[in-house]
Image (cartoon, rainbow, N blue to C red):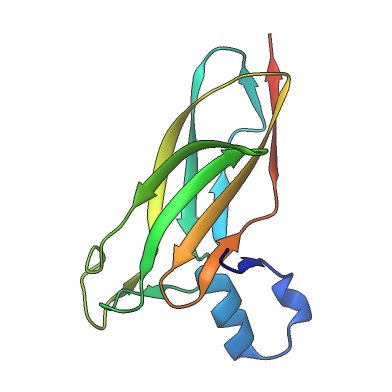
Length: 130
């Protein structure tokens, strides 16, 4: 099983290089705080907030997956070069359409870097109302 890395509060990290490393690999989930049961809503996952990730042949974001607790909701794969290729940098970003279910949802994304493994965000809570 590959190592799973988690986002660290970068304000506690002293060195800019570590801030860059952590931020550019971490997925950031944007979702509404409240949704209506049975309706489709959008969840956007962006890899890196302040810092961009390389898009080299041997070092790129290969996939982004979205989970509700332990249930896989969606996944997308990227190929090297999707952000411009050798020397290019950018934010791998994907928007998933998700069905609101249960009384609440706990959304967690995984971003897979071909060089540095899987990175996971802190869960994002979504309330589901009738």
